[in-house]
Image (cartoon, rainbow, N blue to C red; front, side):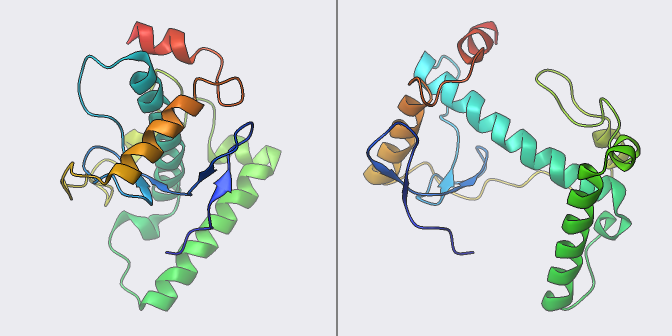
Length: 175
């Protein structure tokens, strides 16, 4: 899938490429960001991992709600790639439409249905045994110098005034 070209982060001068967000099962690549490995991480790396996990949680919540609410995702989609693409786009459009409509949103994803900072959402109980399964390890830890530099620059950005999120330091110190 093609990604947009490089762009400048708010409050910075250097260009940063767009990327997908992955977990430790994925290799670190220019277009795929993964967390730093290890247990006793410094604040820079711990904050980066926290921010990456927040992004992953948004993605997991979205896919989890789609799977929980649209039965087509309870198993492999038996359709041509074009039809499968149309099905996915249609459910995403319906998902977005319902989430924007106040009365319908409360029924579609009621309070506590999605994950928050420390509590898993109820949708996770509804999709147990469905097609959402953990991905096995897909690559090595041998990323290029440029890719490691990109991750380090992003980690530094999260500690600048432009990239800082209130409470991130306190959260990583608690965990």
